[in-house]
Length: 271
Image (tube, rainbow, N blue to C red; front, side, top):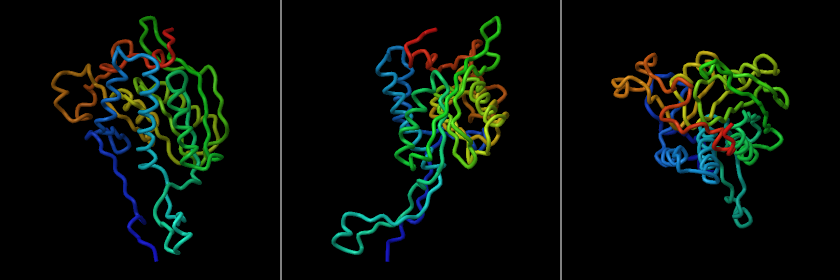
């Protein structure tokens, strides 16, 4: 006989209340909000920038795996099995046979995707984990306003049928880059993913609108919602109450309050 208390392990992350729909998860975590505030500070430089990005993505992926990945009940032999037949633990664990793909969108997504790739190689069977790559850039008009995103290169390692497809990208601003990458998979890659999940540090109401409109089955996880250019009365409302009046992007489509261009600060390349 084995104890049954770990046969069902229910996990629910603490989340910010909002009205954006059930696929949007804004994680309420004071420690991570503190680390993110440090990351966004103009005083934070390398190597502190990448250290904080790495730490935050370890924690965010931890939440996503707990909440979204398949699990199973298993018997695991402990060292005490050498002394007693009761030295076996039975409980619910991550199903290591799950297939997963993490997508690197250069530049800001390079490090977050690599962090996710390394963690997934420990959490799952490594031969079931893959990292794909996109090189893309924002397209802008004469006033430097973002008009979309253009793919200049990609390296996709196979199909996505039945796989969990992860898009770790720190700044969910307009959503144009992620939407473009997701559409590429729909148009050019075989199979239907088990789930499509974005992992963002900061998102805007505009990002949520773009992703949930273009790809309504996508699940969004983020630590912070920035809507700093909304009308003053909107700040007193639950996010999503006046979605059409919420604004988190300036005229150049940078997030406010935000943290500046993460692609630049993470790579020390301000071009």
